Image 1 (cartoon, rainbow, N blue to C red):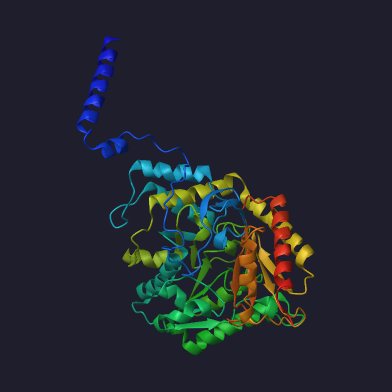
Image 2: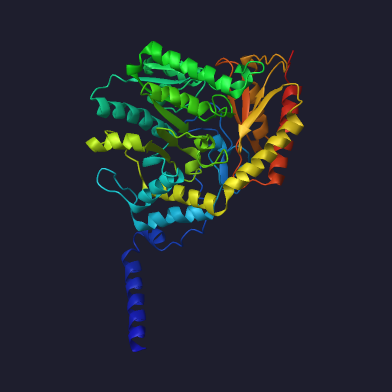
Length: 500
């Protein structure tokens, strides 16, 4: 009892003495003894009204300013409640303000490992994530490399393909990459070079790699011949790829890359059953690697954890992930390699590549928790069930609209392509900016809903698409809301467009 009293007196004297010593610097006293901020309090950073400092896509147009988010909603500083029907670009698969993920992230911060250089250290959290991802492929893949984005993951993948051929054959003659004419694989110079997205490449064409070639995408809405079955359609696609490989010289081709479900470039176009296997068979016939880009369509977005798992008798040589892997809580991507590639790589013991912020524990713990929540809450089942309901509602409400050409997608990744003429599939003039007008109107009051637009799916200029990618926790009520708002946005948009 006496000891406790002495301790209390001692602490009081020290506290008083410290305040006295700092009394002349009152601003320091205020900082040292201030009360901790309330949990989840938003700290504002006021800037001069009307002046934009953050460089975005449109340097002259300010976007709505967010102040908070919770569940399926985002809240703006002008007091609007925005329903998130696209997750940005299919990123926010678990909604906003998820306390479980936030708690895990803050827990890593308390460990004091704010940065763990992969040159010197590994960490249990990143290793656990890599293991979880490999096991989720039924160990069809062997090792995992963690990056800070999907672009970095795809950049790593094309370098891995080159490294594989170099280590296996002792030379770099296999340097040519083949992609698809409507595709998007990232924003770095390397990944932009292998993207078939003219509007995003045009300013940087002088910088893009030259040894990249393209085949047509898997786009049945505009490519399937009358009465053509899946096998025949896939055979045509495989023949096209084989002809290009032979023309270029099989000994020069490194890899072929494709998105199982094409995102922004085409607007949620899934592979035709059998397509992935047919293309891989051609690749392996000539020693070419098959890279599967699941940055947008992976991590459960299409109803299976990895989109390629919906294809029977198929595994990729290299797979990439991003976006939904961190669900927007941390920037993270991943690249996984097959056992065959690992066996070649292990002989040298080195992958000559690296990023400053690769394998960060704070990124990895967020992704681990995302995967845990998906598994524990059986959200893949909800993705499939609600995905079917979303498809039914879209087809029921919008299927007969004179300017809705195609409704396509898989799981909770759906796209709507708009056309000038439904019977001929003629697209709108690109100068009308139909998809952009739909996106902007949807985000404005009173609609207050985020959808994702893209254009150029027909010929890199014409072709308007909007995409939906709601949270995996979406309900029937939410879907009814999405379709209802979307139908009103479409009506109002076309009421104000001369479609003649």
